Amino acid sequence: MSKNAKIAAGGVAVGLILLIWLPWWVSFLIVIGVPVAAYLALDPSQRRRLRRVTRKELGR
Image (cartoon, rainbow, N blue to C red):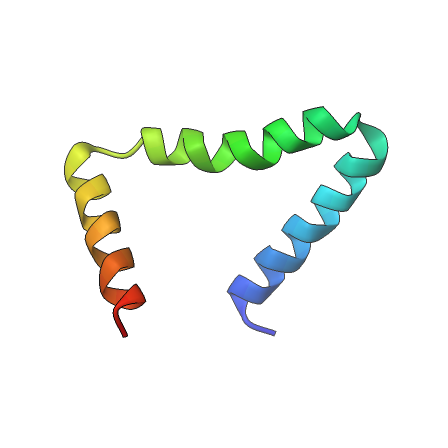
């Protein structure tokens, strides 16, 4: 199993545990809030590069 697959499996496991342990709306805020916070933590140049790469991959 690759490193990324292990991270994804761990994230799913933690998500399921949080969904059972916390109210659904708190789990939803965590699932949405973590990627948004990570995006906002990037420099403007890193955000531009991320958007450019995403658009290139969608155009395939």
